[in-house]
Image 1: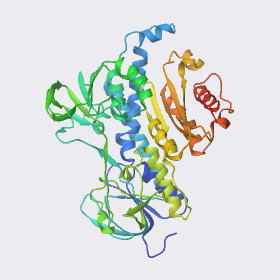
Image 2: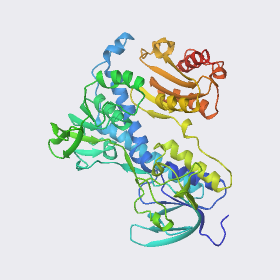
Image 3: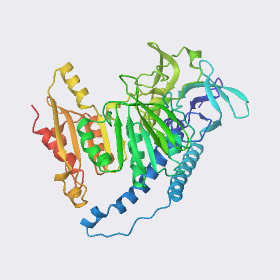
Length: 479
């Protein structure tokens, strides 16, 4: 119950997944809560990210499956040519967004959270200012403030966005049209997922990567098998180690590709459309953080493991930040976990978040997932802390369920400490990899050892046995 000194116990700026979970959890804890949002409730994930993109991937994945006549014929199934309606696939994504946004808003309202429409900012210690769309400005007093303003697509210099022929994932999820030939700049998870969608729906794709190798952020062994399945077997051309230094919208779109060493233009392309998938930038401008002497790092708000905002080496009292704006792991479920942790600490319960136990997934067909350390980072840690490192690989081609599905091209890499058996990381490519990774994420969170894990019983025949085999292989190497 708030005191007369404050309008609210907690004000949250931003109603994405981080802000939503923080608001709901705080209300359940008995706090008087307000959440400030200037745009659509639900933030990037609900409106322009996870939710609509997964709806598109679900629909395009069905098209890909039905159109794979060679695969289906091996199962004794023969299908007619596939027909689909782009507008209805787009409607499916849009309707899902509307439904989830409405449910999220109703949940907050039922929880007693006050929704304040407008642009929020810091107005000093325990002060939040809000300017609504009519220009009316109000200042609220609150005991604690959580910043959860999320992120926006990053567009490099030289790329001109017209939101029609040159666009980001914000527009791509609307699927307003299907270009005959689309260039995707960036080969991270966003670029890969949309390449999956576009190729399934009949588009030609050119994937452009500034770094030396395509899919540079993924485990090298996973990349090798994923490239074969997700890129080389599809109508995708790749160009790596080149910068798209100039992109001009129009019909066609003109792209200039530049060598990173010589800085000379090495190729010019003309395509029907360009999707810019070069990462995301934090939404920290306009928050007035200087009022509390908070300096961002490339726009990201510095926090500790309790989600407290830092000013240099000092903690800023009563100010917290969660989600993409902190730059930790820019994932919706990370933001949600951070929001809950922040509220727990506000309520006096000492809680921290172990980022190494948070899984990530790319929802291509098949999927890619990971959790914990990369093999290179694990090697550095092993050298620093002087322990023996173990790495084992488990293959889908030895799994009965994967063979029954004729989807046996997959692999799990498990990284562990040979001295104590603790799981350090895992990387998976294959059928339902996004679901399989959760078991290993839980093992990292609980600091479980592979000897104990190898004795757990897995249902047969299921894909989870791929994890079981990896645990058993690892247990045989324990010192």
